[in-house]
Length: 374
Ligand code: ADP
Image (tube, rainbow, N blue to C red):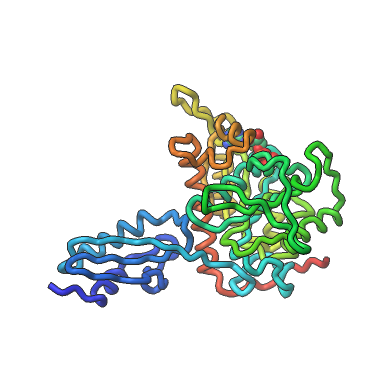
């Protein structure tokens, strides 16, 4: 029995992208079809290498093609082409509207914020960058936490400084072979112990410099670690670049959530979309496997639900997360068997999914709701 490409395409039209609610043919995700006797190989291009729906799509393609008469074997080959959220794609940050984008080669810029310090914002920012890089994306990490830059320590880059090429700084490169993450931090430029007392205009200047005078090159994702709270860095960022959106990190206890809500509202006021909430230090698993909800597991998830925001997942309190951060073991949480691996991978994939959804479903720039002068 001869299998035709048309019959295969017809069958693939029944496979929906579970997040975009359209079939993968209409979404132009089917890139090639090879038929050899009863064997069919289908190339599917995902919108991110960290797609959380990979397995589901593979299963659905297999099931759909199994119904085509004559098909004896199916192979699904994934590739990924990250889509961007440039100004024309409707990136957030009305204050940046109409201005030239300082990062035209960066497809997605994601600010990671928190209502208060010590909730694990930098840890999550770093692990999001690592998780995306491991899956094959081109990633940068900008440590904009000017008051307490911890990325140099956590990334194992303490004591190093970026080189300068012409009038631009070249970010340091760390990470899995072939998947290096470009890292820039104020911590590379000032002595570690020096208290960083910044006034608003100075903060503005540093952030502007990190955007305009750092050789970021082409990136799929630039993760930006913000200082805790609501303040100058977020304002400057939203004025300077079309942010794809923000991730809010919160611990589940009520006092932390109050501040997290405030941070959410600040981003919303700036016109920056919230891509999701991460509940860090959600629970603790003791050596006997018993779980303890130290800070009241579920609090941040509930906050996300009540505010209508995507929830990206829970990350437990885990001694190895702290150790990996302190010792600069960059990929420690993603090593096979690492206790935090599943949680970190889950959060990374859900964020990548949210970014794809956002880029595929926001065709036009949002109308300005707020104007902020320089
Ligand atoms: P923030 O950026 O919000 O100030 P950090 O990411 O610097 O917070 O984290 C503060 C401390 O808590 C660090 O020592 C870090 O290693 C630790 N930490 C963060 N998240 C976890 C976690 N889930 N389990 C254990 N330790 C954590």
